[in-house]
Amino acid sequence: MTNTKRWLDELPLESHERELLLVGKSARPADGAIDANWRALCLALGTTAAAGAVASSAAANAVSASTAAASSVSASTAVSSSLAASKVAGTGLLLVVTKSLAVGVAVGFAVMGVGTVAVRLSANHQQPAASAKPVQAPTARQPSEAAMPAPMAPQADRIASSPVSLLAGASSSVPAPRERASASTPTLNPAIAPTTATPAAAASPEDKAASLLQQARELAELKRLIDSGATTEALRRLDKNFSTDAVSVLSEERDALYVQALARAQRHQEARSFARRFLVRYPHSPYFEAMRQLLGKE
Amino acid sequence: MIARSSSLHSAGCCLEFEEIYRTHHDFVWRTLRRMGVGERDAMDAGQKVFLIAHRRLSTFDGRSTVKTWLCGIALRVASDYRRSATSRREVLVADTPCGASREADQLQRLEERERLAILDEVLSEMPVEQRAVFVLFELEELSGEEIAALLAVPEGTVRSRLRLARRAFSKSVTSRQSQSVRLAAGGGS
Image (cartoon, rainbow over all chains, first blue to last red; front, top):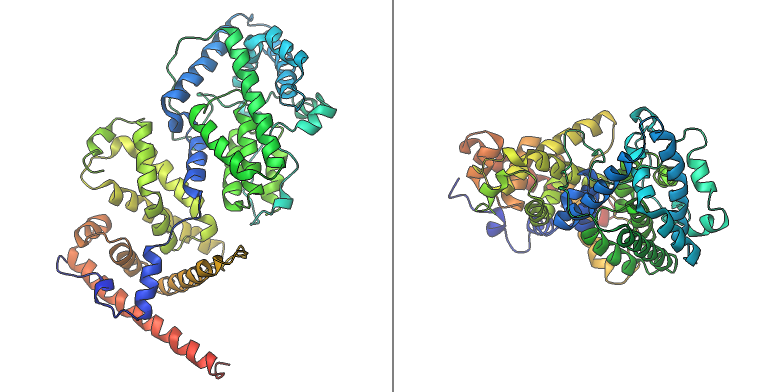
């Protein structure tokens, strides 16, 4: 075998076989596929795998805050308190993503503090697995931009007009708080254990509230970019966000925005693939149906 | 990459895994595509390959290169894909070039896609054993020894499969060219 030459070296220059071999050797996936695939892998691997040390630090903050807050709630009332807190915090979180970014919301953030957010995260972890919606494999293909539901991530317009309805809708039949990305979120593949974040020094509640507010502002700006058609810039910023802030309370909104941006950029295969991961990772998401619609209309 | 393999033993080396991913992504994608995974499913199949690789990273013993290790996973994923696609009665060959060519410079890409579609059709006519050897040797430039180890067959078998694959490839290409000539001459009804 060692003396076997590559066929390409022996074929005549003008041969059709050579032409086909050359195109086969130089074939590449679509532009941006490598990054989009990596993003999807991040989701499937529990996010932290892809984000490295920065992600670990962010996850550690979320986990430690969640633990601290959960411990302050008595066992008998933990679930109900957490659910109530989650609605309040969720409302604040989603409101802050609206275009106005009102000062009152910021104050609300400060008052509520990250503690309530953390309690919400804690409640999410207590959510029984049985309540998860089954994920159906898509049957059709090629989503069109038109198939993409209206504004995904912060859903600013809908939230602005009816800030509570989205949350109410999510919990009307089953009081299921939205599942959030965290270091302990189950992975797509149960055989793969997510990387466990190591505890890091906890930031102050004020710092965390400020960080959340900043993230919410960034998401609102990203949504504005996508709505205006500047999808390339939006995707660039989202990619940067993934690498520097992989685990966040607002990961769900960010991930939904990413799918929307991909769809708007006509990168349908990537949008579809990412949407599938989204459904697995966020089975209680308010964007769940929107994602399913995207896949269903392919 | 081979030199780094020993350090891969410690699972959870995220940065190294990302390096592996970025280094070999295109290779994995091409292998999947040429081994029959449809264009629309290649992305998901590629993710599956790397998910498996991530899970098995701690068991990678460095006896092969990372590339051939990934290739082995990709071949199995492609095999599973072909089986499931067959059960779904899907057609696995020749992705139709999509209609994304709105810009002038897309014409060349369209031609490339057409050639790729022909390449996939030709490859799909080969027995899968010959196809694997042909793809890995001629397109991905793995050595005969690597292919033999990967497929767990003697090198002589690799050599004979390659010979048969080349013959089948040429025959198929010639047949298509003749058909094209007949069609161009108006006699291809």
